[in-house]
Image (cartoon, rainbow, N blue to C red; front, side):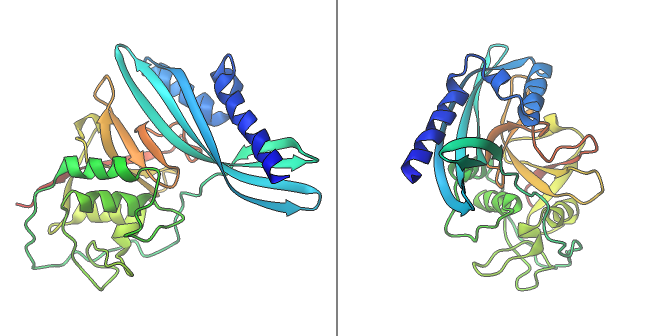
Length: 290
């Protein structure tokens, strides 16, 4: 039975890709918003490739649920500029007597636990460093859709991933063992600023030692290796972070991220299931120590 269900899922994934008009076939809100965003940027999807992997199954009465992931590659044309955007979507399909009757995306919760948001930044220690943007981006490219076993993986992993990228770029850690102090990871413990979106945002806006950043007003001012923070609800509590890994035809950032694993995604996240019209952003460019 499991092999039969997997076969049916593979057929469905292929249908996503081979449909004459993929964009009309995927008429869900997420895809509608992606298409709208692309049109506003004078861009279009010219080809889609997708493949899937079953991650688990369970029974509920006479029904069977199959959890699976779909890796999408979007070949995007923007004027004379071409690039490939990627994302991994988690989905659940319900079968009844071998027939699919429901197939939906399993939405990742970008909200994090209500951990302390205030962090201590008092330090007399002077930490010299030069931020290596290329190494940070290389790390973001290597691990965008997988997890480095050297670090703990979180269900909501976006900030943990960004911190790893910053660390790969030679950003210095400090503050251990106080979780409310500094920015650090030891292997079995970490600061709030390392793994909590709002705490990292506060750290980047205030830190005067170790890893430091400067807030800029617009996304086009950012360089590769810089960080964007997202407050989806606009309530002042930021709940997502991404790292800039490229630029589009107009010099606007393309980003990599975890939780909803994404590569070279347009920075504004208008195609995210978490997006609301009240969204607010913070743009931070990483600076070398003085």
